[in-house]
Length: 479
View 1 (tube, one colour):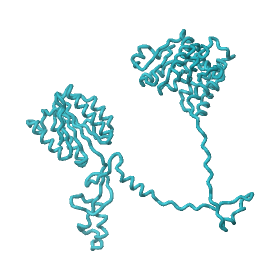
View 2: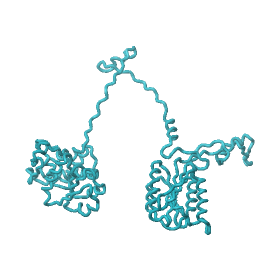
View 3: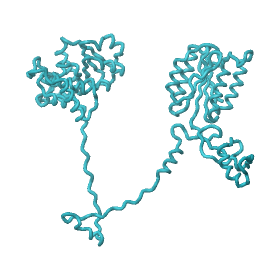
């Protein structure tokens, strides 16, 4: 901070360290007018050796390459006030010298080691005479007799001070070591420069924890407590031990409740044929008997009935057992995309846009998504069932269009996927122009095959939405 007395804070030493080694990096924050004046003072000192490249929010990586911002002897002045393109910020990290005016993006925070917060006094700004505030001597009055700190000593100093201030940033430690060497060459105290202009503005003051308030213990005047008085040294009173009641075992209900919560994949649903096997129970009609569980349950009872080893086992209906199964919950979203030649250009773009919009809801609901493509002589599975919506989106964007429209084949392939789950847990979205031209068998009718295959698909999925992509707006039909 700049005050009316410049001697209180040696503002010129931070600018002098940067002029001595511009690779350290400088960040000017605070008053906008003061930032401009400070940068003008720095530019006057180094404009003979360095070329100044000005970068703002409107710049792009192409404009930075055209201006050769990362070339030799280039001083980049970033005046974006936190609105710089992240790609440009990543490129500017390779620049030889960077001055951030106003505020630096997070990618350049460690690149600009020296931080100078400015607050110009109103009296100085109104008078117009700010030469003393932004004064950098041509020949500093301080001069070092040698080359200053050795690189190893500067690195140890920067690392130790970063640890003391609670900062862990290797790039900042490297820039701080360069600032320490530049300060020592100028005859300044390197430790004071790093504490004031490098680590001080970035450090966070940590208040020590306050001691806990004293606990007022009730005094027991019973005879047993009185017998304990004077037992300690110096006549201190020894408090009786406090009995802590045993805690109840409440972990197992919490674990059981956690298994019953739906979670992001939905609650586990019971299934007769698919899913993770669980406990056994008596067999019911329509379920598949579990042979190992049935034999393990029936053998002791068969011995009681007079069965002998080597004889043919006889099972009673009450001996049959079945295995409970639970499959993973959630919704299976199957996208059937028509990528034939008739969907080229505008139609395929609208179809992909509708599919990408569906992926947004699938990501929020944590649905499993599969993509079936109708193109060529037969449909194929472009993306198997997955929860990675980014993988599905990447496959949709680079999918070409061309060939025939095997719509019936696509419906049957989607039916095979839908059979893996219950019909109530399957949703199918069909994006097509409604003009199939490839039959299932040679000589067949493509339209009839597609209509019949769609009926088969509707038997395995509760909701099938067919969206017809035409030259105008797409029309939807939900079954």
